[in-house]
Image (cartoon, rainbow, N blue to C red):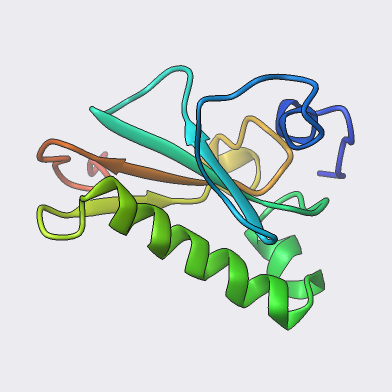
Amino acid sequence: MSYDPNNVFAKILRGEIPCKRVYEDDFALAFHDINPRAPVHVLVIPKGAYVSMADFTAQAPGELLAGFLRAVGTVARQLGVEESGYRILANTGPNSHQEVPHLHVHIFAGRPLGPMLVERH
């Protein structure tokens, strides 16, 4: 999957599409998902043209890697979900159902989330 500079998250980063911002720094932007799957559902995206976690970890400079991961932790703390627990998820590629070709980490919280995957026979 190649990076599409017109994907919805690129447009949000450029300010072309509004978002309900939770956090922003030099490395990342976090905002509420428009179609939440849990009481707390926030997306954290890096500031840069990275398709997936695989692309990001192979191409991003160390400062951005560290800054992005710190931003995910900061957002979870600001949301107040550390004690009750939360799940982070980053889909990569078609088998994972990645819908937007820009790396994004979902933070889910606010209720018991159940098992990660349901076993299928």
